Length: 287
Image 1 (cartoon, rainbow, N blue to C red):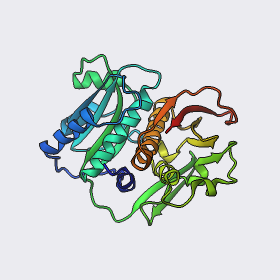
Image 2 (cartoon, rainbow, N blue to C red):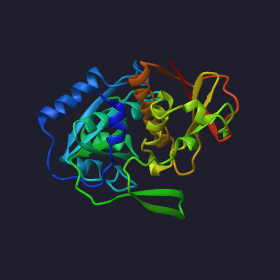
Image 3 (cartoon, helix red, strand yellow):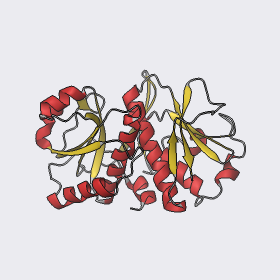
């Protein structure tokens, strides 16, 4: 998969046509999950469930976007075994599947959810695995303009029209610090030209979706290491924060691997100093 292109081409839609995705395409998606889907924690047990429009009534009231369930011809549901980083792994894996949907010219939208047990009961699922991520997908309705909410706080919401689809939510300079948190000196020189691996990988993260477009994270680059720092955010709960982090980690790792070969994220690295009190070092990237 051309991750650089798919990260830029992916789009979240809020309205879907009733047209169903073909059985052959659904089979290709499942094959990708089983054989090629990137995993943050490869040993963690997961299961992919593909639902059709009939599942909407079961999801109503327990899943949605900002408490509103988006009707779609299909839903992806990722189940996971319990783990301290189950949400991060689910975000990582499900975003991989979203990028695969993008490659297949299928639109999608991440959904939040509040009650795994309720969803499992409504769908008649008896698995011991828990609901970890849900995405609506299908063929999106055509729209003239793409709106985005810039939520500074719950009383200050700026609605903008994106004239260029590739406009980042947070720019690279907002996301990346050098040596010490908040320091931007030497950042441009470190990133190099636009075809440099680091610039491409950080740009991919800047395009990553997150709950309310908050992107509560950043990077600290020093001593040839890249640290992903998760920042506490009053509007993002633990589940969404974990999913957001996993999505961002996937964007970085997939693009970096495409340009320089496979690397890996080490979770919960020790001995990381110089991060803000509101943050924690979630992962360190190794080439």
